[in-house]
Image (cartoon, rainbow over all chains, first blue to last red; front, side, top):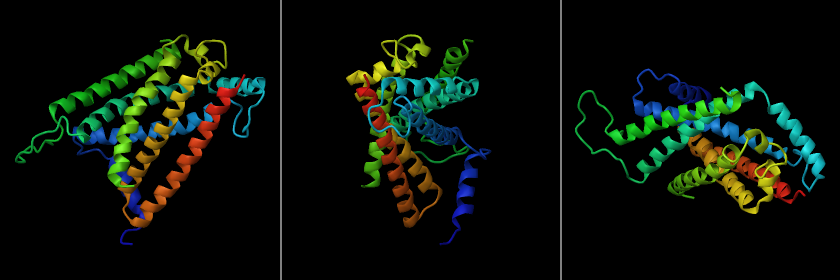
Length: 158
Length: 118
């Protein structure tokens, strides 16, 4: 092995969080990855959380409904905490961004909204990131912010 | 499976999540008071009522399958972009595949049992 694994991973990871020379496309890319990881974290927690609807980890046959209800109510009470609500606002932002930017990426994958190849001239703006794509990127940011506002309204009644 | 097939599935499950996740979020946020929809029972779209509805429970199962694949394939793509090598790629794929199957089993258990609760 040419490069030791851990330093290489470290370098790759810190590349994301050192966005000094990033173009807008790279910002979109980094945010897509970060939001993907964040939503995956939420997904894991959500599977565990909803597992409590039927009574938790050790229930593998149909339990008495009252037992399931008690476990779920206790879980719901535990989750009724402003800290979790703040987390959900962040997840709401991330999820909406990931969705709309993901639609942009899907369109690109199947050949829509592509830029034309051209001679690279100063200031070397990426030809792949067309006006329509830029609009979709900003739309995703706008909708993500709107989702955050909506979730703040739902959880905090502001 | 070819890498291009995996990525095609990634895009298909992504679009599936937009639809199934849309239904899921709609029943939680837009069908009545949010707190009532997260209560164990009592409303048309309370937790148990949703699981008992065959169509909504099937949507949740589909959503589980889609998100399971999409999330873990996404992590796989990120990890094999960080570091390249046949051994690394194989190890990452296996660990994530096993994780994905465990999550799928646990989530499906929740849906099946909750659907059968009386």
